Image 1 (spheres, rainbow, N blue to C red):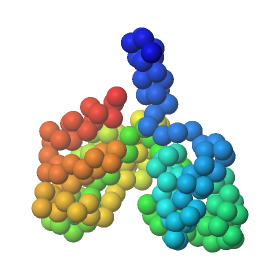
Image 2 (image 1 turned 60 degrees about the vertical axis):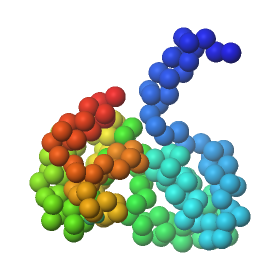
Image 3 (image 1 turned 90 degrees about the vertical axis):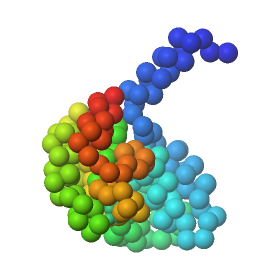
Image 4 (image 1 turned 180 degrees about the vertical axis):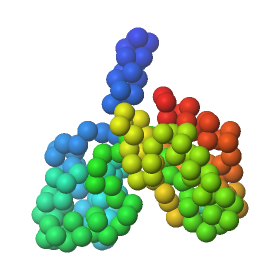
Length: 173
Ligand code: FES
């Protein structure tokens, strides 16, 4: 059994590395193997890659192509077609602010600007310290509580100044 100190050390190590795993071809192969039996496995594999590493590593493309008997261009085309897929590593935290219609009507433009200012990063960018990536998103299904956002996969409705402050505090950790 681990001592409390060992558990604390492990937690510290985990947070230093961030939320995402470091890309390795071995882990990439494992992800491909886990999803290859699915019908239409390309998208599930790409999503699983992004879930694990925070982006779709360039080196994963030829591996996926070979496993699925596709050309590299076909896999690359899929990655670039869907705006959800990142080509660069994400920050430790990923904040997405909804900029679709219902949220716009609830002031998403102003809210987005406040979030960008509070996090000190532009949309589509990762802060130089690697703490946070800020992205727009088009409807989170939370229109009734707009304006809405998502922080590390967690939905946040009624994004007001207090909520923005909380997000800023969260990404400092
Ligand atoms: S438009 Fe923003 S959650 Fe639907």
